[in-house]
Amino acid sequence: MDALLRRALLRGLATFIVVMFLGSALVSAFGNESGGDASTTSPTAPAPSATPPAPAPQAWLAWVPGGLPPGFGDLISTVTDVTASTTATADIAWLTASFDANGDAVDQPKAPWMIPLDVTGVDATFASFIPEPERQLVQDLRPDEGILSESEAHLRGLGEGSSLLFRGGTTIDIVGTLPDALMGAYELLVPSATGDAIGVSHERYALFHVRAQGDLTPETLTPSFLDLLPTDAPYPAVEIRAPGDATYLRANDRVIPPLVLKQTFGEFKARPDPTDVGKIAIDPTWIQDNIRSATLPVLGTVTCHSQTIPLLKQAVRMLVAAGSTDEIVDVGPCFDPVASPTDPSGPLTPADWGVSIELNPSANPPGDKPSQPKDLVHEMYQLGFGWGGNDAYPQGAEFRYRKPAAAQD
Image 1 (tube, one colour):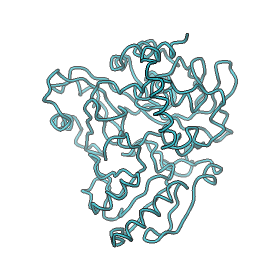
Image 2 (image 1 turned 60 degrees about the vertical axis):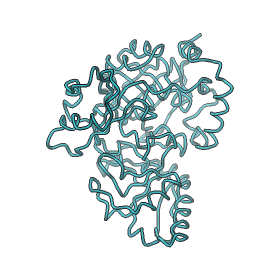
Image 3 (image 1 turned 135 degrees about the horizontal axis):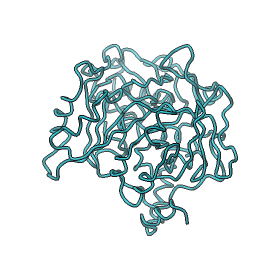
Image 4 (image 1 turned 45 degrees about the vertical axis):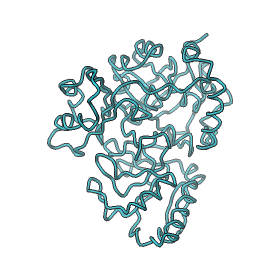
């Protein structure tokens, strides 16, 4: 019996029937779990654990748009009410091949294409924020070893004993999997030094504990965290979540994680754009299969994922029926393959899949107080789009595909 199965049994097999029912509902709601990319799935992929989803660790979360400034993580321990903290890195790492436990190739993207993975790097203090019995797997993690999230293991068709090869030649041996919630829905968790070797070096988020009193809230803690920011911080904002406020403890928790985007809209192969720093070039085959252009009333010509266009058509019909077509003055991009490590929405976002759109961007510059009509925000939310105007660093023009269980927008 392997370690993953033992942990699953400890979480309770009694809920098997309930979870199978819920799992079927989720698949129906969010689409084919493989994302339609046969090159990244396998008929031998391990099935998701037939046990209740693990809750997020009972920790507080803090993150800064664009990444934590240098030294910010170390300063968190100086906040009066903080009793323990850990800081983690997160970035895109470029997968060039993967191999199962038998050494057989699974992922084999043809050069120059690679698979972007959403990876987090942690140090030894991170394990204390993981509950037992899963904590031991993180504590025992050694250099050049990694842990896959359970959904990533299913997507990749990989598990314990498999290995991942990254750009630059680093190979990471997979020693196990963890429930998505315990990894913040990152696809891969590695030691910080190993993360550095594969390009995962920007500190993104911190987990922390506070003194055992019930009068602390994100609002009461935020001023102390803002005081830790340097005066020249490009995005002078801190997002804080109390235990239970967020489904996934990760940076940019309001934005749907890349792992879920892959499951819902398909995984693409890509590479850093050699002609435009901060952007990625996506495999033309994926673009041909998934990205469409359409000319719509009010919005004009939009280029988006094929599953987004019907939602935008419905949004236009709602505006016309309400007599509110004048609420949209100009429209920004929908499909915009940007992958910048300092992007306030994160290094890999819904725009890379063509499932977000900017409305009224001229009146809503990033960082300014949003000026969107309330009924427009409400209608887009009803259609499945969260709004960036509620972010601590507001992005009032941005409407992005959301998951119902994501942080409230």
